[in-house]
Image (cartoon, rainbow, N blue to C red; front, side):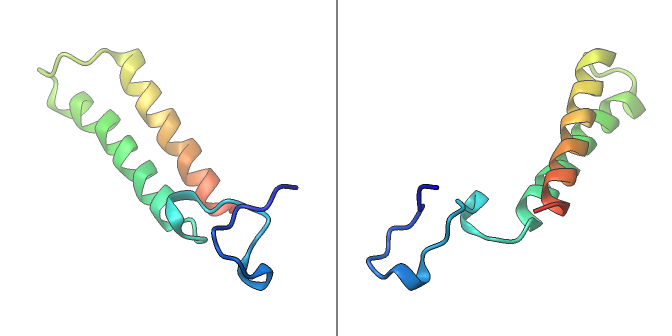
Length: 72
């Protein structure tokens, strides 16, 4: 595997690239929650011109991001 590190010392390098610069899944989970809200809020308001497939796409991608953050 290729090492993703900008440091010269090998001890601080890891073999994986952290998303958003952190090793925890917190930012990915937060982004997933925001995506789910972007899908649910227009469905609750009713007059927003966002179709059902687009809302489901936002919700599905949000669920995927939460899953990716939890399994990290």
